[in-house]
Length: 280
Image (cartoon, rainbow, N blue to C red):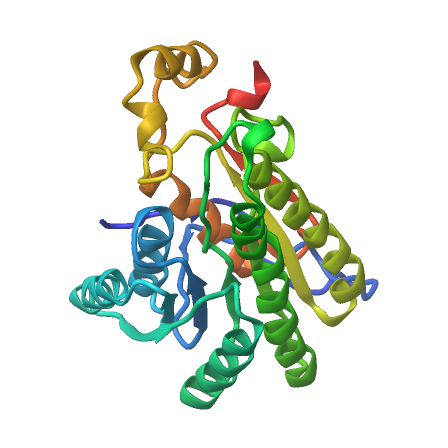
């Protein structure tokens, strides 16, 4: 996958004669993360495998974090095949002690963290009247609690380092709508959406940009049952101005954008990448 995401402008950034900084502008510049370190959770498959490959191809050193070591190793090999550098870390984000230890090891291995992408996620479908407590905790612990504590550990490092950084969480269309048979998932995504805004309020002063991306209907293992259901899929397609479901590669550019200096003045934003679903 060759990335070619560009900004165009004819103005060169600099200092105005009155001393005011002019707007930073990007003149026909492809994303270049050379010298940066990106940590990506949930990177063994789907959206975040594609995002990890995107960061690797753009020059970042990538910490591939996942509980699925087979998939994580595949991601690492794919990044290396693109000429990038990656290291795999086994991480269950539902366990805070593992988060603390893993982030510390990444900093030891790479010396710093510039970008955090919280992509780890799970889903359990069940009628609300029958929803089991253990499955509720399992989903919410990963979707919201785990993402927050990844933010806490990486954010603490970024504050201490004093050079800012980018944190990108993963929201969902279900932060706006409740969905069907997925109460815990909707709760977790709504939670991390508000955590994103709360951390923005605290950390923007340190040059740390905390934002989130809300994917629409993307073909992954989690959404496959809906995609394969002709009736459900047709209902979704009827509401998609784009006329198609998305694929993991459709998300890569937005994650690169929010991780780049092009997003330096974007704080606390939830960016839908949904083929227009929310517009209907």
